[in-house]
Amino acid sequence: MQKTVERFREWLRVRYTNGMRNEEPTPVPEDQAKSALAGWTPEQIAQGKLWVEAWKRAGEAMEKLRAEELQRLDRYRAIELLCGEYDYTVEPRAPKPYSGLVEQQYWFKRAAGRD
Image 1 (cartoon, one colour):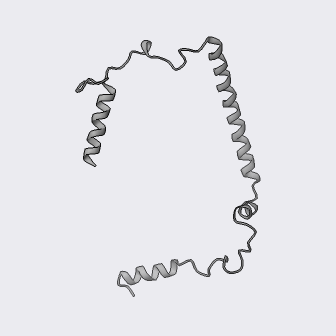
Image 2 (image 1 turned 90 degrees about the vertical axis):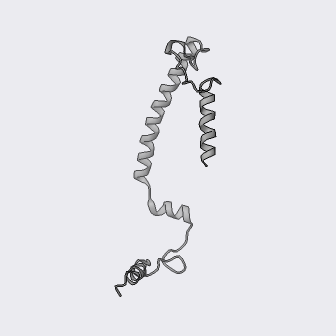
Image 3 (image 1 turned 60 degrees about the vertical axis):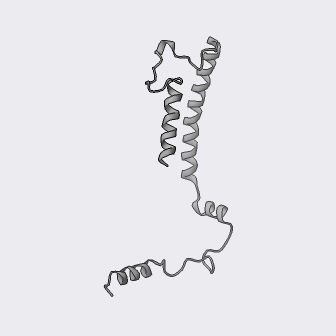
């Protein structure tokens, strides 16, 4: 594991110093940094901004819709859709008369030597 970590650190060092070992990476000045939008025309940038704004508004509307749907949700119907139309009041799907917690507490008490 240690060798893997060391190899990864060496890879990072080589990767971020452009192959020059034992030197700190040189940050690129902000005015020289290449933008992902460098090849876009002003019209494409304007369209991109409109697209982002449209999805921002859509996201807000979708979140409101999701909240409304959750408020209207019939939980019993959702469980029925997920689990099928089984009768959970009869065996084998009916809940057990105990959860096992009492038995667990018995074993903890016994293990602690307090029986």
